[in-house]
Image (cartoon, rainbow, N blue to C red; front, side):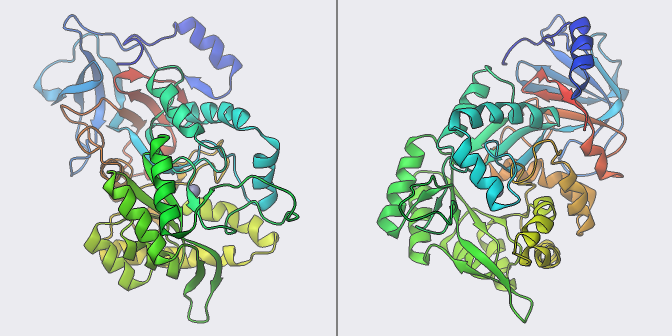
Amino acid sequence: MRGSKLFPRRPGWCAVLAALVIELSLCAQPAVADDAGSTWLHCGGLWDGRGGKATGPAYIEIRGDRIVTVRSASDGAAPASAVDLSALTCLPGLIDSHTHVLLQGDITADDYDAQLLKQSPEYRTILATVNAKRILSWGFTTIRDIETEGAGYADVDVKKAIERGIIPGPRMQVATRAMDVTGAYPLHGYAPAVVVPKGVQEVDGPVGARRAVREQIYHGADWIKVYSDRSYQVMPNGVLDDIPTFTLEELRAVVDEAHRQRHKVASHAMALQGVHNSVEAGVDSIEHGNYIADEDLRTMVQKGIWYVPTIYVGEYVAEGRAAAGAPVWKQMGEIHEKTFRRALKAGVKIAFGTDIGGFDWHINPAREFALMVKWGMTPEQALRAATVGGAELLGWSDRLGTVEPGKLADIVAVAGNPLEDITRLEHVRFVMKAGAVQDVATP
Ligand SMILES: [Zn+2]
């Protein structure tokens, strides 16, 4: 376990901090180990992620970073040292499978360019450490951070600093630089003689693709991220069309090289051709997927390819991008909703991912839950997408996603029953990561 089992701050210090820092409104009580070295949580209710409804009061025993016992409160009294969460419902730590800790929102090209041109990677990394702390305080104990947007391999360092207990933050899988073909990815529009940074590694040809995968894995990438399409337009038949970036041959080279090295591939694919090429090439997840043809949904089910829909960010950027001359962004929401509903019906595996960093880091990404429910999921399905589903996508089902003996002690708690009111997840009141109690923020 990282740090002490004792909550690291004294209550007096906690109150002073809470008065000074608006975001710190609730400091959890100390988690005290009993004589056997166990920490106990007394939960008013429990949704353990193993299927079924939330149960009544339960006790969870934690030793080190692992859960060792989960039992109903009716099977005996609470140990005297138990952390009192009797007014709350406990659930597995949340997983956001699409984040950008190195990005601070980019509604327009100017927003994006300013970050790459006027902020050093070092400054952006400092901001990333604050973002990591913030998302953990909202109950996201694990994230898949899916490219640095021009900040090189800084995500590997953020991940390392968290793993070593130097800074607080969620457990991370990272994608480093991402890839797109020459000329496709910002920065755009500068004079040919002006050398500007790029938000991705530019890669061309199957040989170049394999080389880039090798480089990125060598420097610490857990995932390979590709941008498979760009330049969107709605066709008269309502289909969202795009310009595919990589050829199928290039995408196949990326996927083959990554899989040979036991790494997975996430594909930014928002429309017809980008999605089609990605699923044909056998990527592991489709990011955004505003439009996916029925045929491709079937292939996704067959191949077990995940869909990470990122609904909220589409709403967030639509108005600003339309005002900046791209009205298609305002048409995408409706198309996206229809796709989401078709994917749900087709039985495609859906993981919770928000694209935070594509929107402001002061906005709690848990608002994505309510949108998933609005578009047809049950609250339990939405919750599973952010727990059991996320764990499977990350290849960590053996250690995350449920509250049960043997799993890492990533546990959050909310007031009331989130299966009745999914917006409860926007107000997480208790966060434990790997057995250590964390600071909690209010929205
Ligand atoms: Zn993204």
